[in-house]
Length: 206
Length: 181
Image (cartoon, rainbow over all chains, first blue to last red; front, side):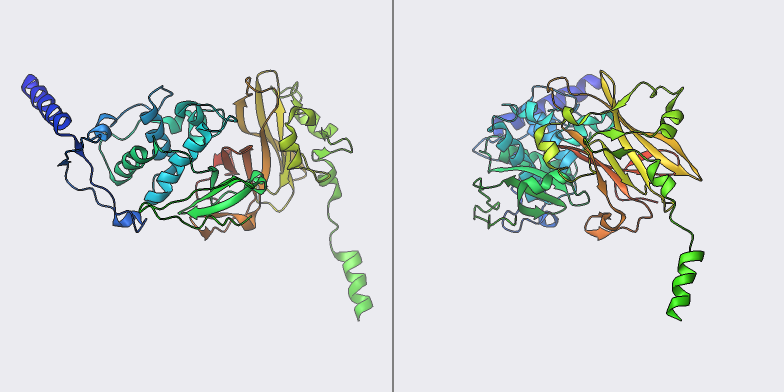
């Protein structure tokens, strides 16, 4: 019985890989996570990464060299409950840091750098990814897919709106998305774009 | 009438207890955190007895710039952390391997010592970039809403990185996630 179950699962996964199943795009013009729906898996001709999300269900968030997993864990621990655009922005902060010599030059290195992201500091926060997909998980998979190969946008810091770090005075406030306030270096260029590709005002308040 | 009122205030309003303030850790003229003798006595016989407050020099220049005012230090934060209306303090102590954030909480006429947080020092960087800062009662909020708090909170920040707020729940310290006594 068990063997039959595994054959069926393997068969399904193989078929998925062959067709390149993908998660449907969230509505990108609203930037509102409440509009986001996960459509049934739809085969596409582009073969875009498909079952990537399901591969990581239940995966460990201990430090690894798997960049997708590092980004996905970071999104789930830092931005679960935040709007989709906020999830993407957290990924872009990581990418901006990867391109900046002040931080590590790889995604996992940046995320697990000493006391930079609070969830990596506390063992209890490094719990595994969920075993079953939920809205946050699906959004984080999508956000990771969209940012992992994207260039950084100049935004390199953020904090939750319920803390008031002394360090925020050293940076230029760029935008608040959900409950995260994002910052960039003073005087540095910032490229913000919404999911629809339009540019948001980067006129930062200092 | 006014004269009588002034006399009343002068003689009948209980004076602020300066003793409790001077008994707290403070920053001296050199910018170092000093632990008063009464608190050193409290630490005697505890595992913290041989630990020292972090010297000013151990912090990076960027961190020190955030504490350019006199009487402030990245390793000392003062506020009312147990909600009794009296001043308390948290100091970052260190030994060779780790840092310990230790609080001195007013308890009647004395203080009690409660550990807030412990973490390994970053061996990759010679200069310390983790420090303490104050989150005042009036600033306490969560998800955009003000939260009524009877006490101040303590932020443990890493420069440009993680910011974790702690509160004292009457027995120990907890990370702040929107609920505070």
